[in-house]
Length: 244
Image (cartoon, rainbow, N blue to C red; front, top):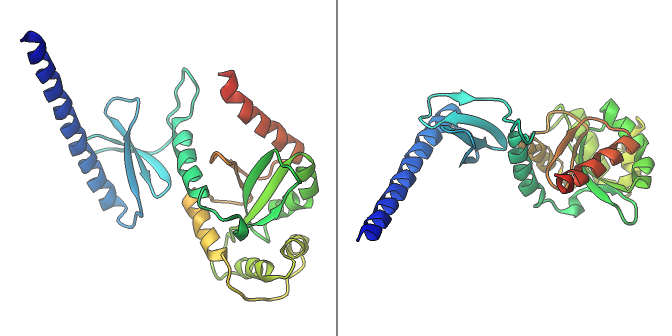
């Protein structure tokens, strides 16, 4: 009888905790929606910190107290393992978004059997984007495939946006990209294209500048990294989980 009573008590506590958590989630979601009424998606989850919930808002990550009174922006890092919990959460979200990308909607420069495949958001007129592309053969020699997606920093309808459209619509997209990166204005062309879609995806992924490099697991590497250094960095990222 005592065992039965203990089991019932445990179940009641579990149900109570679940209801309490749902109430907390509701309070947090209500507050987030009042602060960001245009948010396309809101996902709430537990954190290792008592009383603090993680909230993913349209690709961004913030934290909030369970009662919804306090919002915290910044990174949460486990000082024992040195894991950046915020970046891990963002990477998971990016990985999910990247999984839906069709390779046919990218302009690719790749070795025959790449060791690494990077999605690179690029702006035709960005200086460091041009520097990266000038070394595209070196990236390929280091086993790195570059899958370009457009991110005209000035936005949809800008001159850089129109250049990206013209590159996409060219008969030889790779050559048109190379010529544009060298400073030549591409012949104005119009066709059905994914440039606006790619720009919006970049925004959802948290891209704020170019070039922005994303690995297959959703890790964001902002800015230009020389070919050999990038190879070393990617090797270390792969080796890190195995060494832990």
